Amino acid sequence: MGNVIVVEGYSFTDENMAKQARTEADGVRYAKARTDMSKPDQVFNVYHRLIQQRMFQTPVGYAYMKELQDYLKTMPGIRSEDIRPIPIASNLVVHDTRGITERWSRKLEKEQNKLRISLVANFAFVVSIAIMFLITATSGQTTILNYEKKLQDQYAQWEQQLTQREKAIREEEQELELDFDTVLDDEEEKELQEFE
Image (cartoon, rainbow, N blue to C red; front, side, top):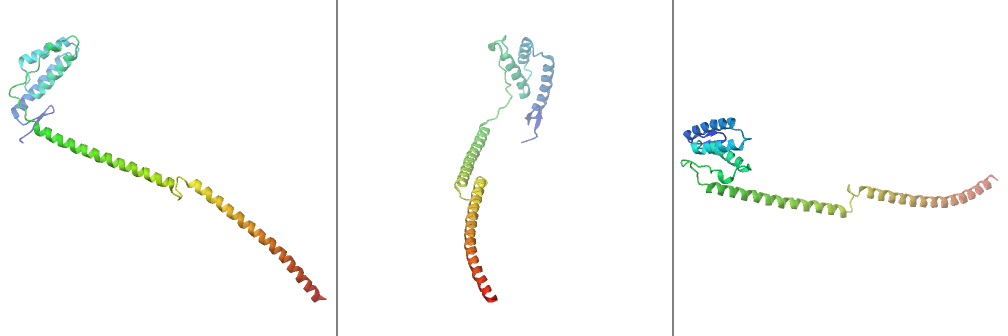
């Protein structure tokens, strides 16, 4: 592709066409400055004068003409059949767009495939998160979800064990005290006998 010239957002490869587009851009600015858009009759007259004089031959001018045409179609006092169509210059070349359409179709298909993959991946993530919650809920190990309950159960179990041990120790103490008393009594008797 040769040298590309951009005029009002349109790219041109033909220098003469780009020059004409610049001239039309100036004409559009002039027409916009002189046309009162609040007066549909004035817009209607300007639109038809531009068509009669074939002022515009490039996409820059056609875009302005289409803007005027769309405006006139919304005005209640102007009938649609009175609005003339925009004549297109015979030297305007329109390239075959099949290649562009095929590229867009391929790109659209790729994007749809990405979307499908994304949906499947998101579904897999949701399922895995649900499985993790299920495992956590049914697991016997302490987690952040059942931490308080497990801690309370453990303290209750310790308290019960301590109570049982304390009871066993007291029972043993009572048994030892009795034995100790009897042992001491026997010993005291022996000591007494020895002193005598």
